Image (cartoon, rainbow, N blue to C red; front, side, top):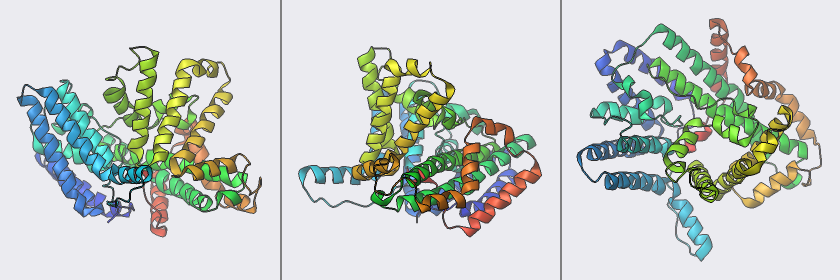
Amino acid sequence: MVFSSITFLFYFLPITIALYYLAPFRMKNIILLISSLFFYAWGEPVYIFLMIFSIIANYAMGELLCRVDGKKKVLALAIVVNLAILGFFKYADFAINTVNSILGTSINIMELPLPIGISFYTFQAMSYLIDLYKDEVSPQRNFINFAAYIALFPQLVAGPIVRLQTVERSFIYREHTLDDFVAGSKRFIIGLAKKVLIANNMGLIWNQVIATEPGSLSMASAWIGIVAFTFQIYFDFSGYSDMAIGLGRIFGFKYNENFRFPYSSKSITEFWRRWHMSLSSWFRDYVYIPLGGNRKGLAIQIRNILVVWILTGLWHGASWNFVFWGFYFAIILIAEKMFLLKWIERQSNAVRHIYTMLLVIISWVIFCIDSVSGIFGYLGAMFGLGGGGILGADSLYLLGSNFIFILAAFIFSSEKSENIRPNGIIALTLLLILSICFIMSSTYNPFLYFRF
């Protein structure tokens, strides 16, 4: 069963929160663990065994790291085991298809469904083992606490990637205050509204546009479509992050931020300091810096950027367009580090923002279309090279019928929107009711990042 809807949350959350707050502290982590495993099993029952295996294997390898002399070998084994699991379920068919296309073979693909959130919890487990090897965290002797850390449902399936040092002490002791509960509830409702009211409606626009053949797509419709996807992926993922951070706070955990208004950036370098910050910092700390970072000369730095960004692309999906997407950003970031950033910084804020968003929007075309011909066909339509003309009747319809949602997307993706966030209980209650109404009236409720 594919977990494609957030409707289940509304049945699951009230019961979980009630049980959690009624339980004594010594039982709270157990309740969180059981609830998290149930939550995961509801989405994909078979893969609960994979999750349990990952927990047991990483706990055992953590114990080995603390008990044997050959720590490097144990860490290498742990990384190989985790990457092998991730690689098998996420990249096996991609590898088979690539081999078939290169060698002309006809090896059958396995068509395994992707375990929800496997990239997130695998990276989370590896961060614990690497930090344990470097003596940056304490070994987790309590199996329940460790299992809850890996499986914790608020951020299990789509992040943010939480490192143990962020929440280590909270598994031993954490306070539960009314202020935290209120703040967490507010953050959850805002995240839900981002997802349901904005991301879902942007997704409907994008689905309508992408269903049109690029050759008959007007220039205006192509831009409306990809701008809609630009907003969909942001509000979808940042909405989920808000929900995860809010739920974490309700349960006494304080997660780091994962987004900081990335569409207000004025360079691609700045954009990646604001977008999916937990993933960016993971690759920086566990890949880029260990490879030498920027400490061993320009040639090594360029190599390291290329490695990190191709891996970042592959992390997002088993398809060549994700590799191209990562390479695309690698080239831009290398150019900014070498010369482009100095030129950009001399320009006006408006020019810098247009430059950044134009490159980001183009990147989303590469990200969401999985064929080279499709990518170039869509880019051609965007820049007037398609057969659909400049402005079509469908463009006016898309703008007119979705004007409120598009306007809301522009407003709430800006840093200035921090000053107009709903704070009062009446406003938040109305926002929650409106979100629930949209959920109940729509069958389109998937989180895009569930598949990563």
